[in-house]
Length: 177
Image 1 (cartoon, rainbow, N blue to C red):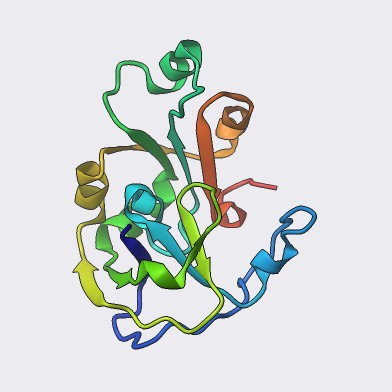
Image 2 (cartoon, rainbow, N blue to C red):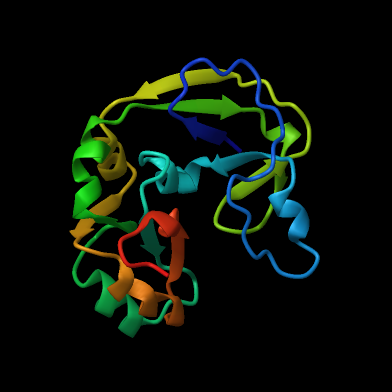
């Protein structure tokens, strides 16, 4: 299993567990996810982090239980494995950004069984680092179709479908409450 951490900092020698910057409602018994952790994403879901850090985005992909109707409604004839929605206001920052993809040792992490996310409670030393300077190309290479929209608010109904929907940094989205 290959795990990654994405950053705009090219010089991270070790990852120290730290609390999340903006705690969120985690549900009973999962409050510890706001505490000091090192976060990682598995290779299959790394596209969720091929964006500038604070870029609000919604990513969709089909699951084993996705209905044909939901797939047709949201994907149409697109052959993409996933769709990423981003506000137009972020396009130039997306194009200009360079991210650093740190490879991390899987044995240090525990799966959250949630969208490819893994956590470690101890310090982790990366095993490699790669600069990514063409994020739209990296998304395309990962099978993700990038869709631009004025706002993300009209996408709220996707959470009522049989698709998987991940909303990231939505607190930075226009008109998101």
